[in-house]
View 1 (cartoon, rainbow, N blue to C red):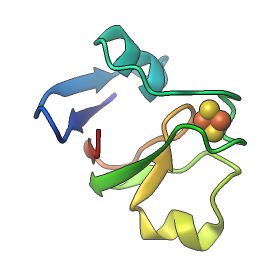
View 2 (cartoon, rainbow, N blue to C red):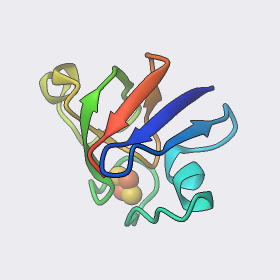
View 3 (cartoon, rainbow, N blue to C red):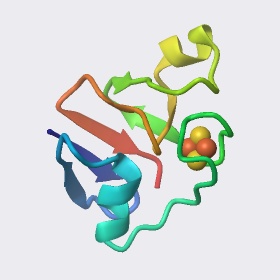
Length: 87
Ligand code: FES
């Protein structure tokens, strides 16, 4: 599990291993727009302000993924214990 922090409110949400970031956010009343939910379309692309994403999408290029400043919340996870998202 890891946690995501919402930059605008400071709220921190735990993401368990069996849940996507999008699902965990939704349970907490934060609805991120999604379409494919498979890391293909880019609809859920979100800026990352802190932390290291575990990229599992096929939308970003490798060099975009390596910058760690954006991620697809429908399928990607975290390598660091915490991500701060620009939400
Ligand atoms: Fe399509 Fe996340 S909803 S990439």
